[in-house]
Amino acid sequence: MEPREAEIDSLLRRSMAGPVPSLPPDFDQRLMRELRRSSQPLDRYRRILLTGYGLTSVVTSAAVMRGQGLDWGAISVMILGPLALVAVARWARRTAYTTMGHGAK
Image 1 (cartoon, helix red, strand yellow):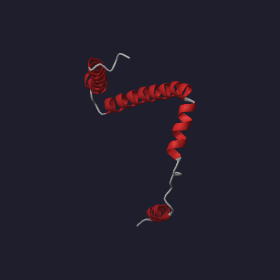
Image 2 (cartoon, one colour):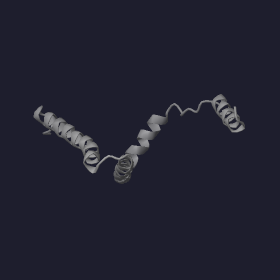
Image 3 (cartoon, helix red, strand yellow):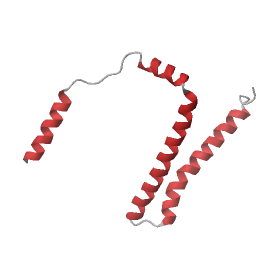
Image 4 (tube, helix red, strand yellow):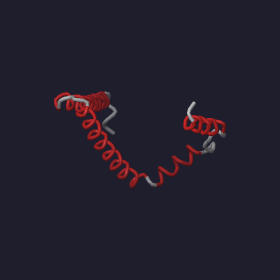
């Protein structure tokens, strides 16, 4: 083994020998209580974060696929296809939910 590999191996062994981190037993209850308390601003920031993540991943994926030699037609199908599938699934679920009588309250 090279000296650098031995150092990395030693670091990994020390890291693996440490205690396993754990959350307190009532963590989920405390988290849900906190989320209920501040749900309105959290929803707005969650949407902003999710939108930013989605746009970043689309641009990155398109750049990587283009760098691998794919044409823009294939790239757009691979990006827009799953989005269309999600939209159709949401529409079908909403339609099924409302036709079963659960939508009107």
